[in-house]
Image (cartoon, rainbow, N blue to C red; front, side, top):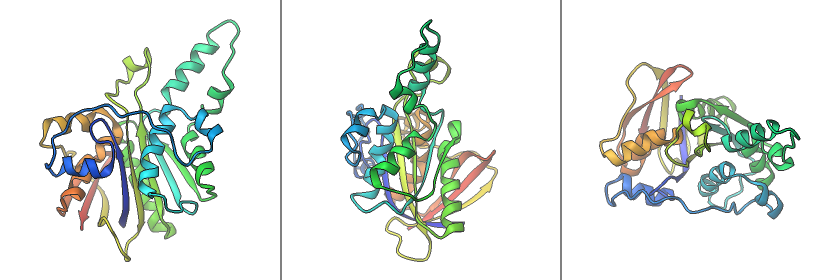
Length: 259
């Protein structure tokens, strides 16, 4: 299965956008784990922007970078994450445990698993298909596999957005993500222009690819969206080769990238 990569968005501590991250992944700049500043989605109307949760904002941070101001209304989307919006889950569970059981209407509005996809559809006036998945630590691999299947089967462009933010306590104790992070890939059918190269995908069995720089390897393990880093390092360096991602439907996902 082959797809082309049109554009990338990335956001993690010390990697605030794709150009900055590419310099770090090429070894041209040291990684400094500076926390990401707050982000206000540019495409959302003011009322929706106020309702957007930190998780939705994290998704928008990279989705907006990947489309870079271009019309995204016809783009199909795949949103993927580990556990959904754990902050909303915590607040609703806490509310229903109280005698009054008063759930915030805004929290209820944001409680659906595809909330980020809904906000995106409003933001870009999209009626294109949208899929939302959860895959624990394999969320990036699962989302990428689903997005590539749609590109190939439907012969259309697909925007993949993978994102997670840490849960509040006590949920954090059960699922301890190390940081907020997100990654977006604009994928398109192979055969035409591919600004960021072509990607061949296949299922197999092999150990997942790790990173040599310890700080980047620790970051890779800190958030499921950052399992993308070995692939993105290939892209940043312009080095053709294969990386292996864990847990794509129970099997390893082999990715061969070439410029």
